[in-house]
Image 1 (tube, rainbow, N blue to C red):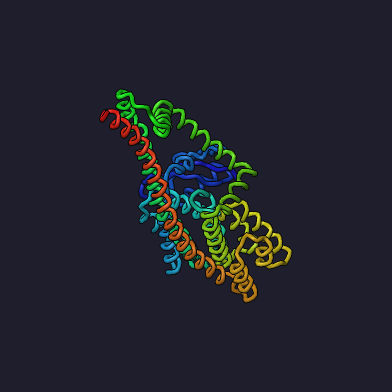
Image 2 (cartoon, helix red, strand yellow; image 1 turned 90 degrees about the vertical axis):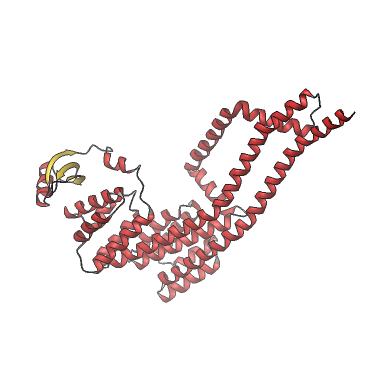
Length: 404
């Protein structure tokens, strides 16, 4: 059925806009009347011209907003309120304008006869495939409140892990930016003034001074070209990373780098375990769960392994068997999954694995920061030391010339 954009007034006279599927504009007007709305404009949405979604793309919904939405909705449904009543109450309480607009659109779709999961699926940039499929499983099993609580916990844990990584890398990033800024300031502003003095005194410049001075002149005279070149290189790498071969090579590099590779692998294992546990515990079929997990891990190497796991499970094999064959997952994790499959407690065991690797990520981050900080300080110290030496050497020659 085609989509129609509509404008209407509710019982209080407030303006309401949205989009809804309908067989015709007349049918949609009748449906809006039955919902208590007075339609003022109805027109068919042109393919690819959903202006509401285009406008919402530039607004932001924080993970905290989604967590609060899940918790509130779960508590209300658990208390015996209907889904429509719960959504009505939440709409009045939401402070984030974008999320409020989305929830109102979801509410209208549910009032129009769509299931909750179908209404959520109309907003893929806000509610992921994981979110929609878990809600669908909750609707089917009649445990929507339980599923929503699991979703809130899952999003909160993923956000905590992301913030942990972000905060740990913040200080090293500051060191890098500050170090580059100091070096650029010295070679472009300080050193040219010293070289001007040395040239007036007819003091010959040693090789280190000439190198750094030439580097500074290049930055001063060609900074725009340098920025353009860097931009082109970054754009080229991004375009290459979007190709099949490029993505495969970049994802392989992320896993195989000496220092950061083990950390990235632990992050992926944690995400894999927690996502699969949440889906399995919510009643999503295992084959469909593996399809979703493959998208969530966002790594082509691990994704290919998950595809093989799915195919083997479809043929009656166990998950642990294919994970062990791949060599991409640690043996302790494979053994725990095997025990979970044998005892029928796969979800419980996957949650234990994700908790263990969350802690492992924290320890690895601490060790990485403990290694990065002194390395950056040493590199910065050596760089500044060489630059200062390149300025002091001709200064000593000038003092000797003057003393003669």
